[in-house]
Length: 495
View 1 (tube, rainbow, N blue to C red):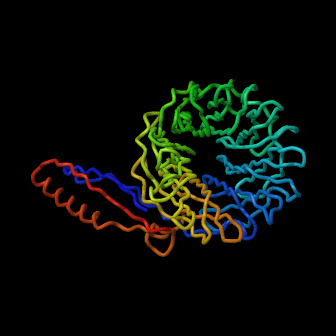
View 2: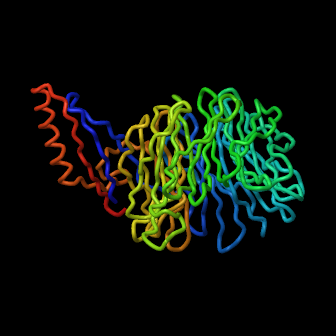
View 3: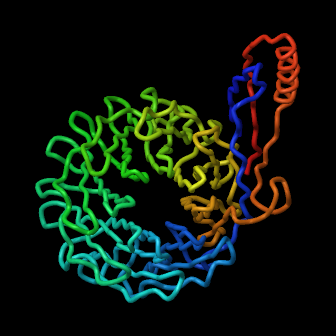
């Protein structure tokens, strides 16, 4: 892999912008048991460092069930437990998990009950036994695409889509401290299909939901809010015609500023756009985040305690994400925005030499953003990661996975102390299992422990740095400020 960074050095100061210290990832471990197919993991980490992972698993084409496991501070994962029953033909998929400030993890999923697809949930406090299964959605119709979030008071808010016989509507229900779920209510308006709901919650208990909806002409992004489990506000448009808006994501900072990102079909191109809303107020006019010169998609966004939002997405090397007439590679890019301000110019996280996608991002209380993604190393799919502290330069990617059959579908979450936990699907040539790595280990970079950075430094880098130092000394002696540019190239070996 080759990544090129341009570092401007002010000789009077004799210092360059710092590159984020590479997080020390532990060697991968298995979370699920071998045999069958374990897929689509999700993970969340609470304030004490307890990670909760959920996924679905099937054997020999049988019924898919939801399973879960926990790990404290990166230690061994517990034996997987079944959250659903393997009743024939009653598949459960679409699992999501969230944790509140009390340490209660709430999992949701959709399951076929023999007649309809319904939304179900179970919860677990601090890694204890999971509660009984509860059905959230109303009987009749098809419910799918659940999402869930937990707030500081222990209130869990779930959203999903359900057919009312004419349109797909976003619905919601809440549960306080693992108690009964409220009667579902409609969040989106009838008269148009709504899809891809997402939900987040601020420190005051205001839940912000966002979704994609067809307005009869095109698809737009809409939003609604609910305070402490109260009524949802009338939906408002975040985007407007013309243009086709899709795949929205949303997060919220400590001041109550919600940051949304989505994909907009802007004429011949797909671009990433963003808007913000403070304390449930009006959404700002959308702004472009990605460059309009090539297609971009699959955005994700997170925000730290200072209000620094970090977005990641995949962007085509060629103009078109679907154009494979040349080198059909996508790269992972990122941009940041502080307190609703302008987004920084996009930077590349992955190498342009091979195809990367499905980026995810999280941030801890220290301001370290950690991104993970899938990448082809020429022989198989691998999982990589990079980090950035307080909008600084992203670290060189490190390989997290080690499966002989490849790896994909990575997810990541961080605790308040600065540790991250990643999970992904590893393929062993027979089936697939869930694997994990974390930054809780004590291994030093370059030791036999931990995931490898596999990084070589060009001779040009050494020469450039040495020459730069000599110039710095000369500049200090002569008291002359002469900026130079040192081109740094790093090549990482195939993972």
